[in-house]
Amino acid sequence: MNKKQLGNSDLHLSPIGFGAWAIGGGDWAFAWGPQDDNDSIAAIHKALDLGINWIDTAAVYGLGHSEEVVAKALATTSHKPYVFTKCAMVWGDKEDKREITNSLKQIRREAEDSLRRLNVEAIDLYQVHWPKPDEEIEEGWSVMADLQREGKVRWIGVSNFSVAQMERAAKIAPITSNQPPYSMLNRAVEAEILPFCAKHNIGTINYAPMHSGLLTGAMTKERVAAFPGNDFRRNAKNYQEPLLSRNLAVADHLKEIGTRHNVSAGVIAIAWTLHNPAITAAIVGGRNAKQVEGVIPAVTFRLTEAEYAEINTFLAAHPAP
Image (cartoon, rainbow, N blue to C red; front, side):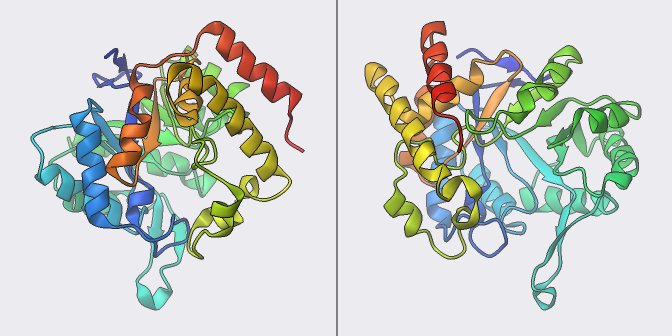
């Protein structure tokens, strides 16, 4: 397996990493619906057994629960993957109705909480989840740099930052990585953010390469209609008409290409993002071992230039309404 170095770090990543968003469970604003912890642990174990060497989670996923599940999985395997997590999204207790807010003023407390939940001595990559509030970026990034100097975190990165926001942070301390959304349904980062990261040796680990399940080839209108009430995708614009029909048509085209190689549409969608040289590696979620097995070919599968062009031609011919 070819691994790529993440920015200025000593981390060498497998082409895909295990994304732990969905395994946080259902009791928060951006949940994916109910999730069985045993399925989550089995998914993580399967990913590690098949060669994935990094896990990406966040404190807010399941309001701390995702990190706890990751810790349980790591306690029952001999694999020692890199563990990445994020800060700057905080929540209250049940009396506060678990309202989620953005704050860069509580990063030190968040780091201690994540270290405890993950049961690790140091976090391999600690990322600012969202640059909100914007006026707190410098203060928050200064604390991130302090945590790195203290050895509580090994490397520090950002997520969802603009070029201007990365430039501000970089004046305080080097940025190891940026984590933006990137899929063939969301290409906003191509114009400025990816070129900036490539120029400044900032690694890029993209999330939602299959656009939260839309490009897996397994999504249907009937499945969308049956989403539980606490699945955030019920209200996501790309899961609403007229975008839904267009996006499922894109997935059908990916199925056609996948059939030629005996891989799923999801693997094609992941490979499309990895085709961009600015991408270090892609974050791929899995809610059970079977899902992990379905996407693991993305570790080695690569599109030819002709196939990449074919997909882009299809996308141009079928623009979003």
